Image 1 (cartoon, each protein chain N blue to C red):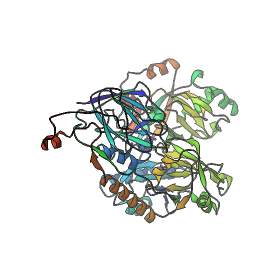
Image 2 (image 1 turned 90 degrees about the vertical axis):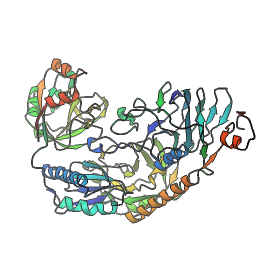
Image 3 (image 1 turned 180 degrees about the vertical axis):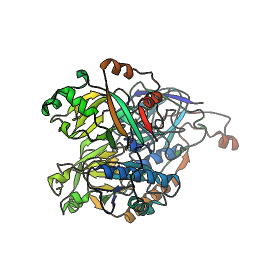
Image 4 (image 1 turned 60 degrees about the vertical axis):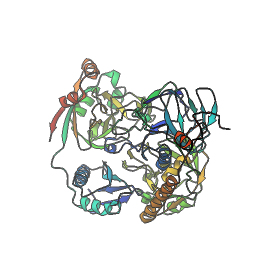
Length: 249
Length: 348
């Protein structure tokens, strides 16, 4: 459930965070996406100026602006009005159907997740594939999407000792969230597979990140050979993305 | 003509930066950009560049550059003692707050940066590709700058054709640009309600000290730990963060976020440093002690106006000067004093 009145939180003199609810909640998150879109519309129409970045997250939207801009003092009242009127977008912007490989070479934690829930690795994969996920927020690193919610029957804590190096493209779960690591990085999530399509690619100039908050994501299983074929460089990145985009409004 | 510069020594902690990479934070891409934009503006003004032209940001040990072709005009804003070695082996200091022109075969050794952050400007900038609308280097994912990393020995870059008319006079300032002293001002929030009732008083009352754990992403502070309301209040549902945000993880010790900070974070943020004072955080080498002061939005706006006025005044007092060996042909011929003679003495 969201707040009855949006909370406007000051983040210094160059950003406001508009918080719509106390916790992770699909309806609150959907209203955040609607609010981010209405703020972007207000910027495009010239009704709101000085805004430099609009960042929707799980339960809030952060708006970064130029504090030297003459309209900076009026931004909070604009945001409050837009937040009160915020409704979810009428439909998910985009739905992805992405390949995922669960071969043991990419899935060092799959057996442990299976053991924790007294399941076979095949049953873990089947449950994971059965559930569409939603991108609740982007962040942590460029292109990193926080996706939820994975089935309750697969819920698992983070590793007690995080890995110092998680290979890029790893598909990982923690709590009831899933994510794909765009880059080699430290990380404490459970690695259950890998996804071959780059989730951040500077060649796609308008949108280097594959995902946007609000996207719906489903996965289908591929074998290691298919993974390696899809991973090969040289494919046109925009065409490659389009291949796995099943619905776009 | 253009120029080509070779990095003879990459030094340490030197990156290409500009005003930053805005408009991509919803994709998880940090803003990056100058830690101290007004100081970069000073360096740029000294070579006739626009305020936000790309500079080399230097934090620990500046680079050594060699001009392999052409000529370029440079200036340094900040505390350093750079030395120019001319192609004929003569050495002369590059005075901080003065521009100088380097010709083919000349080398510039910047040396140690004394107070955390300095800028090397290059008239006309460098010919480097933009990534997501900016030349700023974000080292963590190898985006922007020179090959996405800090300046490295052996790197080279080109400058644009006709970056500056090197026969024009150099610019100098009679005084350094200096930040006023005093506490670092911050606005409470966005999560000051996640802390114990006296935590804001403690934030303001404590003498904080910067630690060695600092980079372009943030600065960890040491001091008396701040108390969260309860242990559970030390974590939040991750939400937006910004340069200047003062995050306080479970150990109670604040982290002031800087230009390369992530776009979202999961620690509560007790307060956020205002735009006017954030550049000063770049000048706090490990062991620097300071206090915070809480202000409201109106005070933050006045502080920013005061900063901008300080900068405008500083830029307004720049004067031309003639370096040793510079021949002002127009003036000399005009006075009919010489028939053409060039000296190139080392300075001092």
